[in-house]
Amino acid sequence: MPLALVIRLLVRLVAGLFFWRVASNRRRAFAGAQGAPGAAPKPHQIDAQAAMTAVRTSVTLSWRALLAVTCAAAAVTLAAAGVTIAVLTPRWLGVLLLVAALVVGAAAWFEGRLLFLALRARSRLRRADRLRKTAPS
Figure 1 (tube, helix red, strand yellow):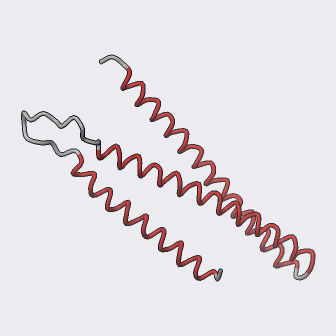
Figure 2 (figure 1 turned 135 degrees about the horizontal axis):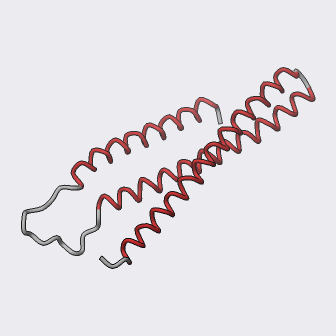
Figure 3 (figure 1 turned 120 degrees about the vertical axis):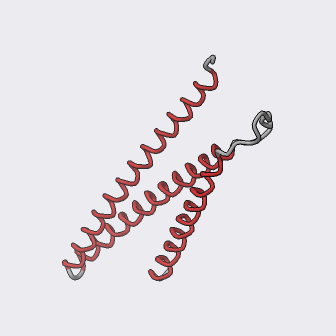
């Protein structure tokens, strides 16, 4: 697949996620609106803000996982190409590819670390929510 197509697909994905995030931030301002004074809330309503937060968290975690896996795959590919080219033909190109593999590998490690921290924060928030729901008021 040509590099221009890959870049174009990535730009479209990033733009779509950006516009989705902007639209969901605008909706958050209206999520806390209250009904008529004295009216009882409907018992079967879904908490829109909690649902939107759950969806946003899932998308963020999925995006981080996709980035980490993509960077790791690119690092492995660049390393293999760098070693092969360094052995066979121009060494400077092989060294350049190996340096690029190191940079992309560092990015993969960084994204993996952020994914791990986000997963840990999500599990802590879920645990805190469960404790809040079970604790006597």
